[in-house]
Length: 124
Image 1: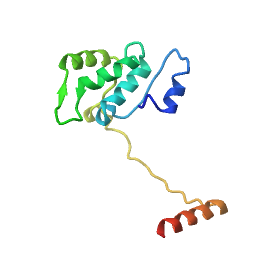
Image 2: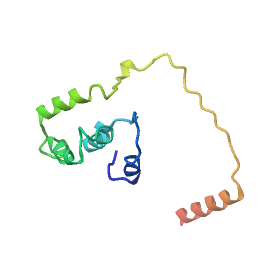
Image 3: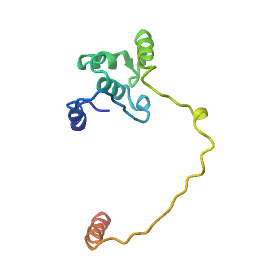
Image 4: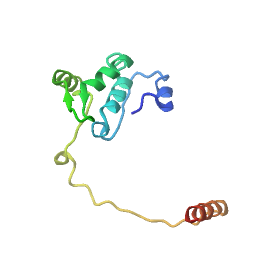
């Protein structure tokens, strides 16, 4: 979600025929993250040069909320085949309850050493 991160830069060097990105809710975080995802999937449609225009079209983080409705409609139309959005009503309701199992594992000598060292450092 950050086109400038090392992992993003490394992934962009890979050659692939198909790509699938699974993410949480980028629209709730910030719209530049959405642009970064779209730029990764479709760099021809969302080139680097479009980042500022995309960000400026949707000024939601400022006190002057401004949305370019024409851009918004075009973006929604373009993204419709790219995104799967489920609402709570559409999520499977017949799933069995989550089962959690806790298994206690003793720490190795080295793990115990570092664990105690971190605890003592944080309590000081």
